[in-house]
Image (cartoon, rainbow, N blue to C red; front, side, top):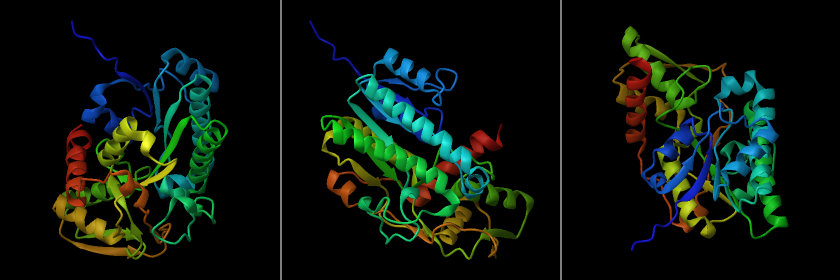
Amino acid sequence: MSSRIAKQRVLLTGGAGMVGRNIAEHPGAADWDLIAPIRADVDLERFDAVQAFVREVRPDVVIHSAGLVGGIQANIARPVDFLVRNTDVGRNIILAAHGAGVSRLINLASSCMYPRNGVNPLREEQVLSGELEPTNEGYALAKIYATRLCQYLRRQEPELQYKTLIPCNLYGRFDKFDPVHSHLIPAVIRKLHEAKAAGNSTVEIWGDGSARREFMDAADLADAVVRHVEHGEQAPDLMNIGLGHDYTIKAYYEAAAQVVGWHGEFVHDLSKPVGMRQKLVDVSRQTAWGWAPKISLEQGIARCYDYFLDKVVST
């Protein structure tokens, strides 16, 4: 007579977003009893609703990936929303999990928490050591709040496994391609695709293209999260998840142009904001934990472009 081992019940917030959907489609998630509510199931901005939902679900692990996200334009235009809504959601899910007796929580933060003038590569202990980048300060403050809340709870109750992962910039399948709300790589893919379709010989880059960024496929972050669910007790409280190397903005444009098949010249608008000059995370803790990303830039952009063609262009 065989006995069945109960699956871990995992509550994933932000299940409809890019990160959440990449986590849900990871092969390792098939071993969980995964619950990924959408807004119709629970409004994460209402603490009473979140509290009731978590108590009803009674998860073994919470993965918090929900939040309002966007690129430079969106952050500049709506700083109040990026601060207040993300702070509310982070506070609600973390305190609701704690109140329901959930002992394990993975909080997904952001590398925008680091000081704008921080020495690169950015180490975890540099959080709150200097002035934030003004173009996304509201979002950064909300992520710092959730991170500190996890740390404070763990300080008061050391047995809690409330830990934070700090991903570098992300892109990938299920990304947004709206020029107003999207991040760099999906915005570049759409811009180049439209330039190719229109027969345009030039494409504009904000700034001189020399600012450096570290972009990782969200499927790699999902892989790290899945590993954390299984081996999180071996991970530090706060850990960067990234590539360990970066590229210039112009290099991302060039790589995307090759994938899209656009052949032309780039022109630069030096009046536009470009954010931090460099944002490269230190991956020493990640390496010591025994994890590394697997998807190359060319593979990642190709995967993202295929998704764009299938889900955006063809619909």
